[in-house]
Length: 362
Ligand code: CXF
Ligand code: ZN
Image (cartoon, rainbow, N blue to C red):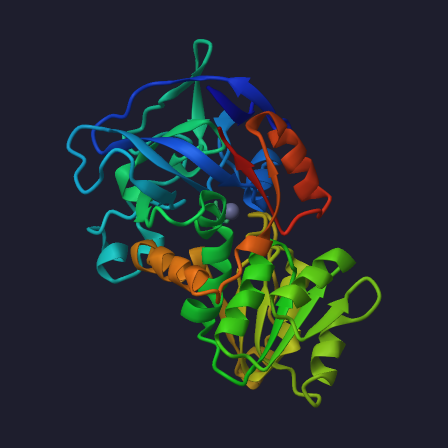
């Protein structure tokens, strides 16, 4: 089968690989759609330090094709969205209702039992986030799959597996944005646009979108931004202050993973406001906080991983919002690609072309 593989740092190519069957606790998924996310690029360029060679892809939806030994609760033909974090339900994080921090396995390219299911020739390949779902098929832990209604188009469903869950979750679960409030979003990629949609759903009165690219700002408006700032031309922080009577916004979000933007998101929030850091930056970079102002400003600075989601509850909720016409996933998918064109999809991501590009399979 074909898969998008990163063989070495800064390289990616479509390769013909072989897949072993599912072992105990695993599913074989015939992929229907895989979203192309900036974190795939972060793996390619080493920002996320996963060992290579490795099959990319962590935002996908597909159909259950085979059950490994002992897997209950699934049937062949079930439609599933894949979570990029397995959730065991038993570890301390799962028991304290924080399944996004489930400690069953650290993503190191291997499956949960420490072995691999994918080969290129005789060489074993790793997979991203226990999934490696930018491929025609994937072997995944059953505890990484969430059943969904079969009526939902798979290219839309796939987005819920990463970008949309992360963005909407950051607003609803992490920041808990309240109706009538003001929100600033730094960075309008797939996650930033989902934050904007979340803020709209939460009833924010002002949603200020900040990005360097005019086409992204146009999309931001389409998804609910009330104001846009092109930070190549204007100062995002000053605009946030100006639009809030000098105070700063109630809630600000950073959705890229760049220290300078995290600083700006902090500056854009009002005293007592909430700053949510969603972007995943480099391990080698840090953000300073001012020793006087941290206490004086009384802001809450929160990190947000996977939209603080409980995927088993939150994926179906997001898809219900989609079916109710309140979460716009249709316009998020601005291009689809075959697996052969996956490298083009990565290039289009790098040139900011899409809200989301999605790989679809026959
Ligand atoms: C990431 C977070 C770090 C691990 C891979 C997935 N989230 C969104 O892309
Ligand atoms: Zn992602």
